[in-house]
Length: 209
Image 1 (tube, rainbow, N blue to C red):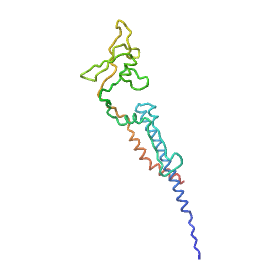
Image 2: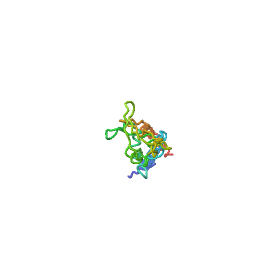
Image 3: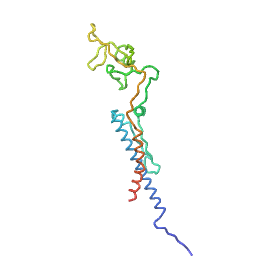
Image 4: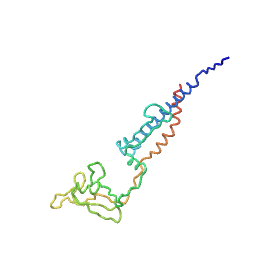
């Protein structure tokens, strides 16, 4: 006597199909979460007035890079982590040498390299000497003797009579600066993470029909 057992439908095939559906659902959910978080962080940065250049430093990458997996993941990061992190944390900034922080005033102008100008760089570029002015109330100053050009920047005075010559405040000197917290990246990250289970379920169910 022979016994033959046929299972219809094929349970193995059903399980394989279910696993494939799960892989598609998880991968799609993580891609959506990564893209959504990248967009949210970029909107936060531009909304805080920090510019599109810094916003575009936010990048995302999906894993696996191709194909689908139940272990799919998304990574969102910034190519300028120090700047973004500072605006996210609002740290207290002190001089690394233990001296003053020099904050340029409008008369200092801008650095040629697009960075905040330093007192040494300013003296080399302008050909003027900075003089320390101590103030008992309020920040001390670095000032220069010269004239103000049309842009309000201090330059060398060529006048032999001293006409138009002024003592221009160039830098404020402060012991420390508290950077205001302008971003809350964790809030967006938590929202993206909270949505993942629902998106996985929705994609899984949708893939079955």
